[in-house]
Image (tube, rainbow, N blue to C red):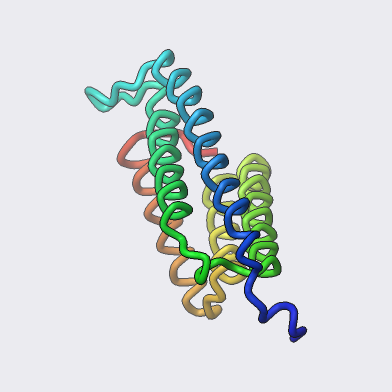
Length: 162
């Protein structure tokens, strides 16, 4: 491992980094607000066993706002001693980008091989690659999550899964 990777980021780098995190959080809140506005126009009711088109986007937009607020608070509370090295931040960005690509791949897989197979394969891959689960735990958890999703969406909500 190179010596540079073990050295903390300079103190002057911490301020701009925190500012970028806060700006990112504010930008995500604005995006989520537009998302919520659109969701509400579709209808958000979950009454009588019928879920309107805007319900899922509404809940996802709400979650995005909460996570963005956590990002902003975390950036404000981070001390310079806790700041990460440039290499650590690059590794986090790379991992987040790969996670996004895997979600896009999941969406494509659902269209090609169906919901159950795509969920099983995608969750297994994510557990192994991103979290380092053993093969046994990966199979167990991906199977359990796939079954849970099937029970919720197909049986409980009556959603026709591809």
